[in-house]
Image (cartoon, rainbow, N blue to C red; front, side):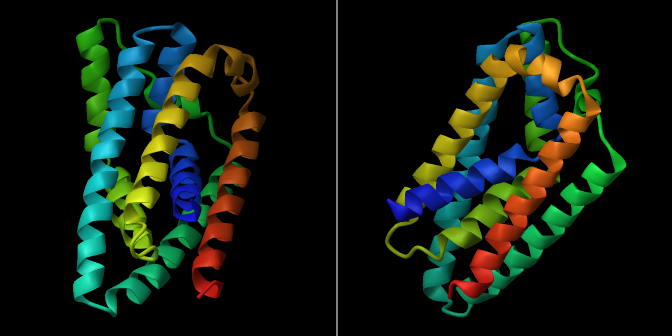
Amino acid sequence: MTAAIAGFTLSFSLILAIGSQNAFVLRQGIRRAHVLPIVLTCAISDALLIAAGVGGFGRLAELAPWFAPAMRYGGAAFLFVYGLLSFRSAWRGNDGLQAAEQGAGSLAAAIGTCLALTWLNPHVYLDTVVLLGSISAQYPGERLQFGAGAIAASFVFFFSLGFGARMLAPLFAKPRAWQVLDVIVGLVMWAIAASLIFSH
């Protein structure tokens, strides 16, 4: 259960960081345009990437005992930089909705845009395959639970974002709301980085 909660928490925190994919889902949700296919596309894509990361990195950690500690400290460094970028974004101010300005009229166009924003984004691979995969190695014998928690977080997040966007629209029309969210994301990233370093 601990591994599942850790996977859920980390995955949710990583997905929470505002990017082009999330902005697109939010915009589609506000417009009520093809919301279900869009959130399913995002969540299933994440599930495939998470499964690849957890499976591959877990096996590698078994074959090379030095690999897990190296990935732990590497993951902590990555999270520190990730958090720093969130703080910088909060300082500068950011309108996250501008990242998905193109929108999509037809279902095919919406799915195509969503797939491109997901699979052509290098940060997606860093978050799901590299980072989640490496951290899953810290839970020997419980990687499946860690991965299940991470995948569940993806489904919960994207369904909440897509179908809850109408309620969030007035709030996120204000740039200050995006700044506050960026600060929260940065703090969570640094807290996870600290736990990776000091909990072993």
